[in-house]
Length: 271
Ligand SMILES: C[S@@+](CC[C@H](N)C(=O)[O-])C[C@H]1O[C@@H](n2cnc3c(N)ncnc32)[C@H](O)[C@@H]1O
Image (tube, rainbow, N blue to C red):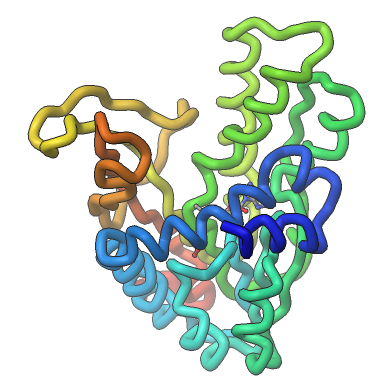
């Protein structure tokens, strides 16, 4: 615990990352993974295998962009770094421990950025603001990966606006805003002129403590249609008592490939 407090106090991070709770969340994500390691392993393996399978379809591997790379639990970073000339990792927080762990990979670059491009403005005005991001769109990547990020994007913004918006927002205004944030991420990643892998949770199932009784199903702020999933699996995110003694949480995660025709733009019939 003392270690985590020290990390929080001494971490280099943006004003927004602290104010929106990202720094706290990034530190706690690493601790949660340690506690739940054996329960998360199959989810992590599914993510890595899906990325490797799709990466192998890319013919010319110049550069790859990973959005929401965080602690790289779900990313086959060694494979990506050995296959692509350049690997760009984007997250709102890159902890020093993670940067140090992969410092030997000289073609891996840690880019600290808010992928929604909303946080500076929302922090300044305390008002709702939406836009379709454009970060790194012109970089001609060979592959882009949005890695378990989509459902997270509205989460911190909503919490911040719930407490700080001036004038106060209604629940309907907040929800409409959250749906727009997710839709704008999807529009953003769809604009890259290369194949794009989207891995995201689509359902949260809450079970009673004995893991037998389904208590509640929640869905993230996604109200646009997605293509057919290539693969889906269950992530045992929080077996009781991780979040609560009263319930466990499992998430249904799906993996999609957008712009599939761009795996081989020269000869689309080979796909
Ligand atoms: C569920 S974690 C994904 C973990 C990661 N894919 C891995 O392999 O370990 C979500 C990540 O999204 C990042 N994130 C959340 N909101 C963000 C934002 N607005 N901009 C950039 N990154 C964000 C978090 O910091 C966190 O690392």
